[in-house]
Length: 141
Picture 1 (cartoon, rainbow, N blue to C red):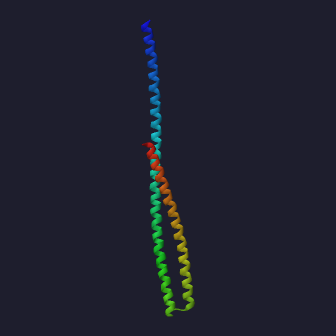
Picture 2 (picture 1 turned 30 degrees about the horizontal axis):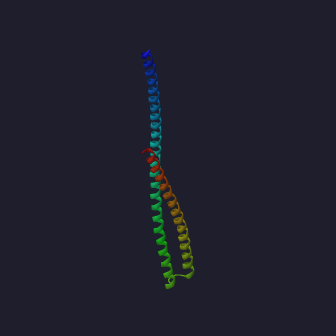
Picture 3 (picture 1 turned 60 degrees about the vertical axis):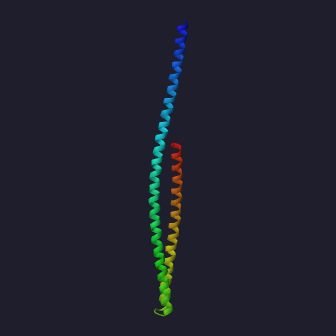
């Protein structure tokens, strides 16, 4: 009778251990799936960061080009004003040229401001994405 109790007790303990092992296997599978999903998400964020960085650099180049053009137009306006004071051209034609140049300057200024606003938005996206990527990395670790 003593052997029967031991066998029954051992069988019960074996079943408990089997259940415990199965529970841990399931937990490992769940964690593995979660890790793979997190890694996939991290790769996606990394790709998005690269795209945003490229857009940021392109926007920055456009802004620099617009600034140079704006400077050139400002110099052109200055030259035209000097010509006006020198009396080298008809006042009416100079005034029309000045207005055209100022209009172009305003258009370029508006484009510059729009590009700067877009650049700020892209920078904000990059910061948000980096924060999200950092959060994902912390969760993975």
